Length: 255
Image (cartoon, rainbow, N blue to C red):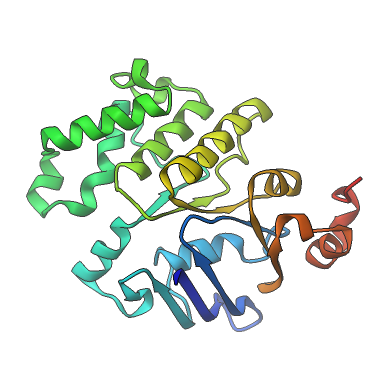
């Protein structure tokens, strides 16, 4: 059975042209799926519609046992989101707080209002955060303020924050676009480790076609809001790249 089913997803920001147009696909548990396409093709809109950071205009998004995400409200939506980790392009960390405190924010979806406001976490939750930080090689940084970290380290904190949610799927919105190549490789290697060793589904937006082909088992290609390619990474050839990127494809042609 599919972990995520997207059916007829459409999003309009204005009346001129849709950001997403009648998008349909499904994702199985444990897949590593990369979403590629030129700027403005709908990649970020897709991710943000899935976790309801923005509202879709039409369609259905069925996630796990939560049912249609677009129909959920209040507590039901918060509960569904606990199973969907999110990693952002610009980290979305609280700079003045420590690494450990930022990671523990991944548990807020499980908290009542007062526990969330006062940052009350169980010893089990704290131990889980330490375990995840150790897994990501950040055990020596857990009490350091996040504004003292490099970009790659901040993104690893973002991965740790997502992992402490105990998600079945992690949505990644261009997590390496602002990193140098070395840091980007570290992040992608960790995401692959999370997928392979923990069985967590990775759904990631990428600008880099070569990175998508190297790490993903499956690729979704978007152009002007439409899904124009959906297949195994090895089937993404120059013909498909041209269909996805149009006039921009010349710089992406594979050797």
